[in-house]
Image (cartoon, rainbow, N blue to C red; front, side, top):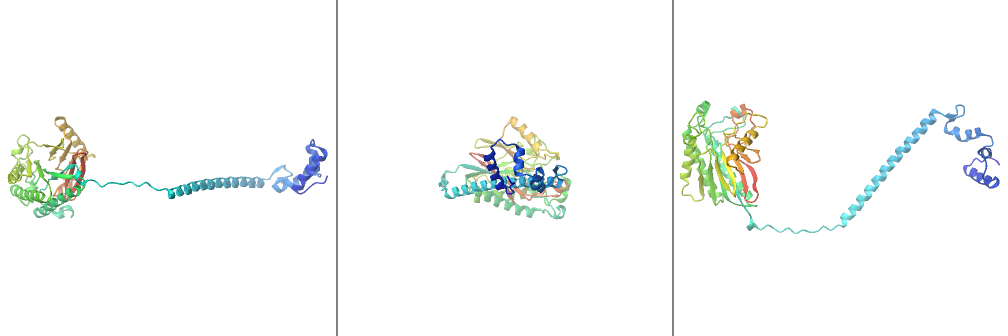
Length: 391
């Protein structure tokens, strides 16, 4: 039988051969049928075109390289093909999801308007402290960051009173606020406790106390007339600046501090005003219970910080813990440090009306604008809002 060049004809020839001679034919007989010229005919027709070297009996290096390239390309094509198939599946899922979203009809929820007559009650708490109305801050001593004197003190105090009413009114959308607590937290004047204050203050301590009284009366009257409160409770704490002694004293500080006169004279001024009451204590600590929660008010000179990385936090934690061992309090209100902050979860620290001064810049304290404090005590949820009152 003649050899067939066409692969199709070779197959046909193989079938005819098997039919004629049977299936039990050796490989050598079949080779003679299709390659009558022997194995070299196969090499010439099949192997050589694929890079087979007849002399060495193996494929050439170039043939191996081409074969490797071909395999690598096939693998890359297969990998890309799998990625495309995976992406197609993902897109089909997205298309199916989008079609379902388009057909989805959302359920309509009806939100009823709140009953304005069923608001629960809250108490507004303001901190007024560290006014230092007799002190002077010259702009050039603080790189132009602040300036302060008795006239600027008056302007800032008036802005404080106005903004206290504004911030209380913003909260009345959600709660009923009938009562305001105002902490007169101390240091209304700087007095003469440091030699430099004797040289730089614009007023004597007595003149400063009378000026602070005038500003405080103006503020209480403004809140009384414009705040919409049915009751105003004034909580007082003496500061360390208005003392008449070289150092703070303990047993008789109340009798050696000009702010005792300030608070008593304010209470006497408003004695016929039923909506205003004063809580004046001889102790450094002043407590009041609101909605069954005990609140503690103090000036803050009791807290000593060494300026560590934790700042005021650790000393304040320790001091509150000691006080709580004797008379636990739900929340604390502190002044003195001239920086509005919340160093612990249970204490609000007030800022100052005086603002940044040469002492602060010398000790590397952070600059803060003139600021006081507002806190909202909710009858249901406790302390909910802590906000600065800018002056």
